[in-house]
Amino acid sequence: MNKNTTIDIILAEDEPALGMIVKESLETRGFSVRHKENGALALDAFHEKQPDILVLDVMMPQLDGFELAKKIRVENEEIPIIFLTAKSQTEDVLEGFHVGGNDYLKKPFSMEELIVRIENLLSRQTVQKTAAIYELGDYSFNFPKQQLIYKEEVTKLTHRESHLLYHLVLKKNKVLDRTFILKKLWGNDDFFSGRSMDVFITKLRKKLAQDDQLEIVNVRGYGYKLMAP
Picture 1 (cartoon, one colour):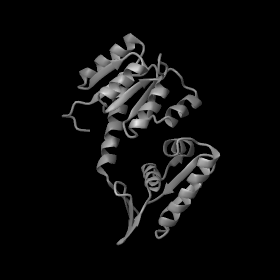
Picture 2: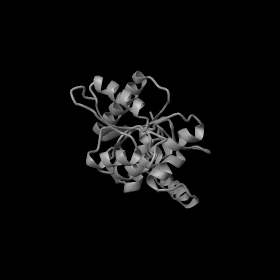
Picture 3: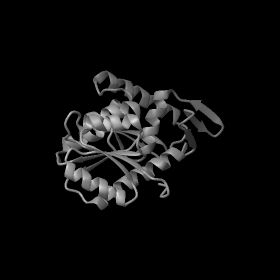
Picture 4: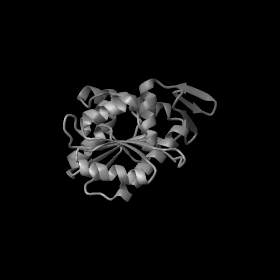
């Protein structure tokens, strides 16, 4: 993250006092913060100017944090989203990630922790944007051009193959949640979408087969894992 660039944050928090404290604390650290007291106002602010990152309370009037994130993800798949919530149940945490959240912070929280999480997400996004070509063993994966290159052999990927491999690469050697990727790339996680994704996984396995260091493993009940050096 470039420290010389002012980071623009949309903060959606319906508790006025907490919202003001967070806004002022972030601004003293050099961030620019647009505080909105409900999801609808935050969505309007997003449409006026897309920020660098969003910090969204889950429980808000008019449009809650999860519904707001869903609408934002339709327009922008990459912008980082942090959820703030008093909830701590596992299903609530999973729901936050399934609708496109990148991080989850339980109330009450320290400002130092929030700032560290904001900076980590922005730094990670910068790395992803600059790393247009990913090295996978003996392969190179050019995501913008949707190409897999093995030595001098170029294989063209479809849009969905490319995006599926991109998410596997981002989670390299970790499990890519099946429900998350189905909702993100197929729009739902029903049986037919699941079968379609299995077909795409098989296609990617064949296209990566020339390097035996690479393997896409089915983690039963959870998702897939790209094993790579």
